[in-house]
Image (cartoon, rainbow, N blue to C red; front, side, top):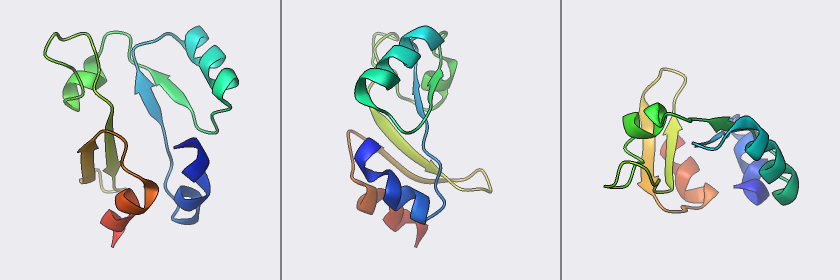
Length: 92
């Protein structure tokens, strides 16, 4: 995601990471890996559950990528690490 941000910006796509770690942990992680997009805290896993990113144990997360249009509709959803080209193809 970090290295593909120019492709997302060119298409006016905003990227966010979401996981249950706290804000302080996110700040350290962002600095360590030079992330150029924000990480959002989902401490109670509400967002992760809503987007079906929780593992069967209800605690662990499966990396899941969503592209949501400005109309609120899901345009792309896939587990794993799809590349920017695959994700952005959903824009048409």
